[in-house]
Length: 136
Image 1 (cartoon, rainbow, N blue to C red):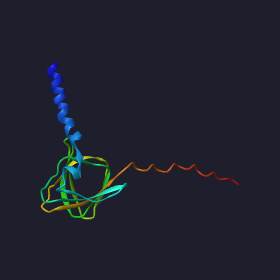
Image 2 (cartoon, helix red, strand yellow):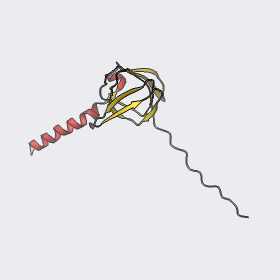
Image 3 (cartoon, rainbow, N blue to C red):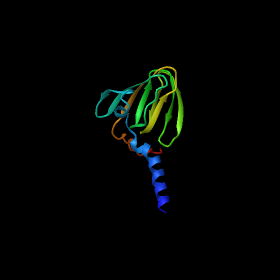
Image 4 (cartoon, rainbow, N blue to C red):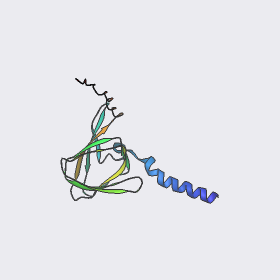
């Protein structure tokens, strides 16, 4: 029984540790992430990866990203899943909050502007009741 419990705890630690250890990209990977500007609503990051460079596992709040260069790479996630990507300069994308480990798999540098969104997203306006029409 104790052996099973110890094994369970070990597996849990191995699976959960990457998620719990995912931290602010600027703090854990200052080589690749630089803060350009920050206020109460957003934090704007300049991101640069040289050819075949990769980061460490880190997290972001919800983001909008604009790629400044053509690039290809791989995102690794805490659950072990990997997703390859290929983008062109000028491509933009939104990502929900989460943790990942990016890798530039290309032979050229990769430059990105990342806008991290702070606070809660605004609620959509309440639906207005339909106007009544009179029949004549």
